[in-house]
Length: 115
Image (tube, rainbow, N blue to C red; front, side, top):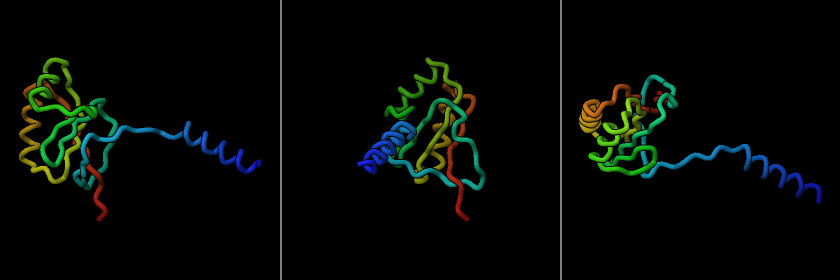
């Protein structure tokens, strides 16, 4: 009987101490980078999926709505997490449209290379 009490206490401890995170609305395989960085620099997270879908803080949006949100809300900083299969020209074009909508600080999230 005492062993089951210990198991339940450990279960409760890990349930309380564990950190729950939200999942992305679609799968993302991040770009690779030779340098590291702090992924928690900005409060907003923008996702670009392999098929071009966009999401801001876990909410899927079309590009027009996204740009309007940047203009209307005055968002000036964002973290960008793009799938590695998205062409660089697509990412750069979106970054330019975001800049025109008022974005001033963008942090491109990547994972370090294993080489």
